Every structure is written in C-alpha cells, then in structure tokens.
Image 1 (cartoon, one colour):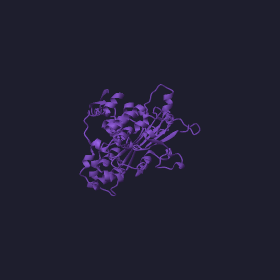
Image 2 (cartoon, rainbow, N blue to C red):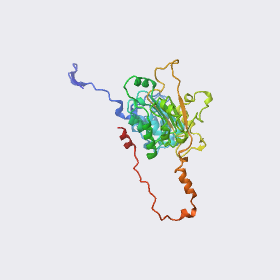
Image 3 (cartoon, rainbow, N blue to C red):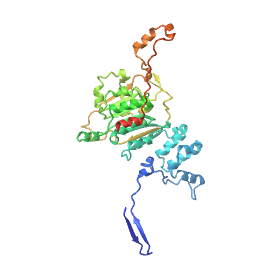
Length: 397
C-alpha cells in the first residue's frame, strides 16, 4: 500500500495517509465467515426510560463478543440462568450457529426442547469443504448433522473426508444439472461420487467406526457410481434407506445385481409416506425422512437406542446450489428416474462363517470336541494395522 503525506493547512500539521484493504471475514475464524460474533442492536426491551438494569448490562457485556464463549464456561451455570441469554440473543437477532452449538453441547437435555432444529443454507461457499466439515462435526454427538452437498465445490479428498463427521445422520450428494451440462460440452472435470470413494468409506466404517449414525443416503445426478456400492454400504450399521435419482450407471446395473445377497431390496419406503399420494421423493424432505426412519421398529427389528438419540438437536446444513438448478422448462424437462433401496437385514444377521463349516462342526460329538487336540495348532490370522483417515486421504492426494 502506498503512503501519501499530506498537510493540514489550518493547523500546519503534517500527517501520512495510507489506504488499507478491509480484513477478510475469515480472519476471525471459520465460524464467522458467514455470521458476525458481535451483538447486533436490538429493540428497546426495557419498557421505560433511564439506564439499563444491572442484569441487562451484564447480558450485553457477556454476549457482546461470542468468540469468547465456549461450552466449558457454562459447566457450572444452571439452565434457568442460561435460558434468558438465549432469549436475549433472539431479541437482538444474534442467534448464530456457533451459539446454537454451544448451548446444544452445554445443555443437551434442556436445549433440545427449545431449539431442536437448525437450518443453514450456503449457496456461495467462501471456504473449503474441509473447513465446513469442521463446523458441523460433533465428536461428543451433542447434535446430529444432515449434510446436503453440491459436489462442484468439492475435491475428491474432501469427499472422502466426509467420513470424519461422526454425527452425520443423513447425507445428500448432488451435482446440479447446469454443472453437468457445462462439463458435457467442455473438458472441465467436476468431482463426483464414485465406487472408489464409497469403498474407502466402507473401509473407514469397518476400521474406525465412520458413518455409525448415518441412516439416509440420497444421491442426485451421480453417474460414476454403480450397484457395486450396495456391497460397500453394508458396512454402515445404521443405514436403512438409499435413494438414487438420475444415477444412470447405478440404475442400469441393478437388474443384473442380486440385491438380497448384499442385504437390500428395491421398493418404496415403508415409513414416512403413502406411495399412493404421489411422488414420495418430493413429498418428504431429508429431515422428514430422517425423523420417519426413527420409528421404534423398522423391518421388524428394534432400533438401537445406544446409537440413536431421537430427541437430539438436528443441524440441517446445505452447501452449494440446489440439485434441480439448471435450464429446465415444464415442456422439455426429462422425467426423473428414482429408485428406493431399503435395508433387508441387519449386518449382525450375516453368517460369520461358511454354511458347510457350521454343518461340519454341528455333526461332531460333544465328547470328541471337549477333548484337547493333540494335533498341530490352528493357524491364527495376523493382526493387520487399521488405516486411519490420514492414511486414506494420502491415497487420493
């Protein structure tokens, strides 16, 4: 920046003037790129003239800069004192996502009845997908996250890193139609979901417990996936519904695939909507499908309460363009091809060993099996080192 020296003719003082660029919004941290941590000016709620009360002054001072507040600061503060702070933020229109997460972490049983649902929609991202994943992640499972992601703003390693969101309960992967039309007519390459990425997710699910909370998976315009992903998705313990819309390779390869072998069956969902009322893919939102999937019994099996907490606050996070965006009119719109795949059986019901071996063991007498074996020892499988997310991301870089 150039420095200009000037003189005030009235006083005779000489000074320097320099034009400075405004500080980027990211300088305060990723939590404050789209929101401000400072308390906005709200209406006069004192109901009279004169100075503010000591209580109002304390609230304003405490909430003037939300960057100083953490969930640990509210450990010894009862809810009856913290609840007016949330109301105060509402009157001043300063209920940021950051404070929503702080209260959801500090007061899990009380806050879920006050603000059980939070929706955030960012059409024009200003950070990398990795930074946004850090905003929606909760290692303590203080809230559940639903992610709707436009793949045109992501890279392949970042798609793999979605597995690090431990509290993810519903995932929608989409590529807008206008992006697809541009890539078809040019050499531009846009990241999309593929069999390789889903296979990596499956490995992380088995080695580190990734996607343990995921129940709903919805795919839009993902033409690089095939029916092979159904075998990999079997490693997701809570996944009960997969919706694929306009996924050409997946839909084309289904007739030759034995769905029952991988634990899936094709058909409309048995929960949440009546198929006779129209297109159920448009009737229910992703949040409604997630809530409907939390029925006490699905496919005759009890939902595992140690994994799912139905009353936990839900963060609906949408990143990128709408999946239906693009040059489309009422007369030239192509009909949508949508399939619904439901979990046919739980992973625990799979046989742990081949059937002929089990029959052979069952035919042995109890007296014979109880005697110690004098033959050679049975071979023991070597313990292989499990791969973490850092090792997996290295394969894509």
